[in-house]
Amino acid sequence: MAVNNVPDEPPKQFVGVFQTSSIKAFNSIFENLQISAELSETMNGKSSWPSVAAILKLPEKTYLELNTTNEWQRVRKQAR
Image 1 (cartoon, one colour):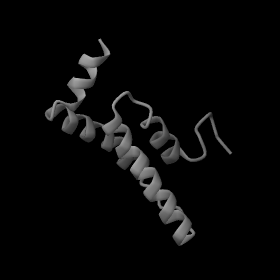
Image 2: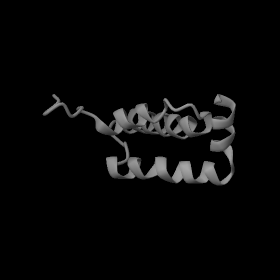
Image 3: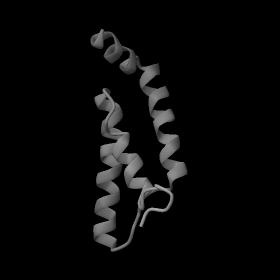
Image 4: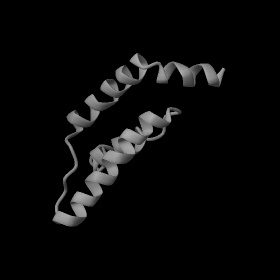
């Protein structure tokens, strides 16, 4: 049950939200994280999602990496 409007499963919620950007390479990082966590959870019978803190570090790291390789910039230019 959610308390004060906080989802029951914040890691899953954050990973889902981070799959909705306009950058396919960015989304795929979080899609792979979701698949890995769900497979591990199914095979081991227990939750194996990273902590919210760990999940929230990943978007910044991924953005910086994609920005360094100009992947982020190419998509912004195409959208114009």
